[in-house]
Image (cartoon, rainbow over all chains, first blue to last red; front, side, top):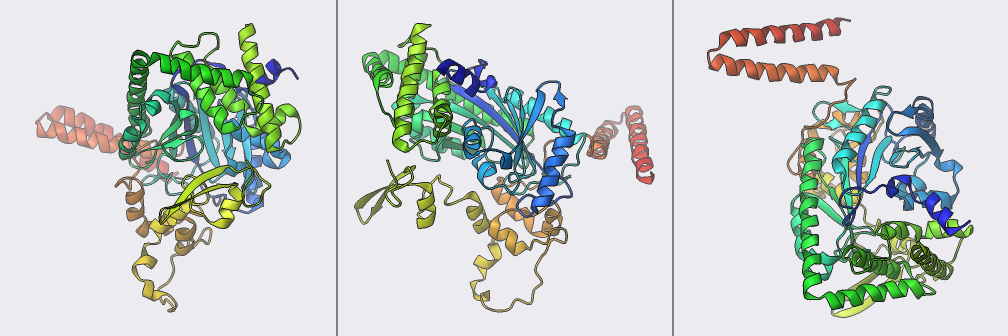
Length: 356
Length: 178
């Protein structure tokens, strides 16, 4: 398979859309946790019960066309190979938990992959909408539409006092988790992030690196989401997150501006060194690749590098993960093989860029 | 880099431990980390549910002396799925929607701790199933409005609203009889 074809098939269609503020907010995600009112939650349910739940989805929702999201496809975890599931995890379409732990897991996917409904994860249903850029409000609107669409045909567990009932008490009420993935290199370089993080936590929001907690996030990528789900309306939860993200965007832009003014040469040196390493290395670990890609992306956004397109970070961040590398290679790879493949893939991808 | 424990899988967790000023670096894979039981922030080895169960298990932490003594007090048990409150406290998750009713007496303080002092839902109501709830909320809202007019001695408007409330209540009653 040619690299171009592989990339176009591997990248979710929703990722190709340019959203607002994509230079800093890579993606916005809204998920709603929902459960059937009478069936026990997946954690105590029997496999038979869970399979019934899947066939319920199969008859009522799969292969039905939704006016916004179009045709939906149902994928059962039991029918998939390990690496196929891994690729879905790396695309953030399913959780590792659904892939590995669920007794009878499945996912309903829209064609453009912006909508995924996980079935029999911790809750019976997890409706998830993924959009590129900073589009939390739209994310909530779309997730609500799908929620109504489903509720029209099945009874969700709901109580006036507690709201939507979920398996974990941290999700009860709205069942809403809204999050954004942000690229904040300038705030990290200028060491402002360590000061900002505790403040964000105090506002009831959670900040994580994409590979777990800790302020020194890999590739300067931070995921910010709401913690509280009970006692606030969905709109307020999203609005509170939105206002913090808006401020972070402003701070990041200001930090980039001052870096450009005060240390342009050092910045140029930094981003071009990383560009050089990505262009010529023969083997590269994922940790280093992520950091170098972040540098190059910053260079593009600051106008220091102008012959590479901006979405290369989003794209290569996804493509250089183990599952994708193995899918491209068509076989299971050892760590050394993966590092080598990763370097090759990045080199070839950058070459494509220079040709265009 | 290979995991320094099993030498087979790729090391995905890298952390530094400092005990009495002595620094040790670890590079291990997730499986070995779980087996070793090392506390690693951000990894799944210490899950949110374990944290939660500390929060939920209020009774046990208050009365450690009860250990080993047969408790005469009856356990709260969910009739629908069979989960006991003790099990809920251990795994940090409800077994079914009915658990919320069965354990209701204990839930307010838990929810308040998790959700910054809130224990009552203030968000979306399901469209179809919650139709009656919509009407109840509408009635509450109208009653407030009526009081407002009464206090301003605008009785005509108040009467109008009173009629609206009556017709809404009627529609609710007729539904219940169906």
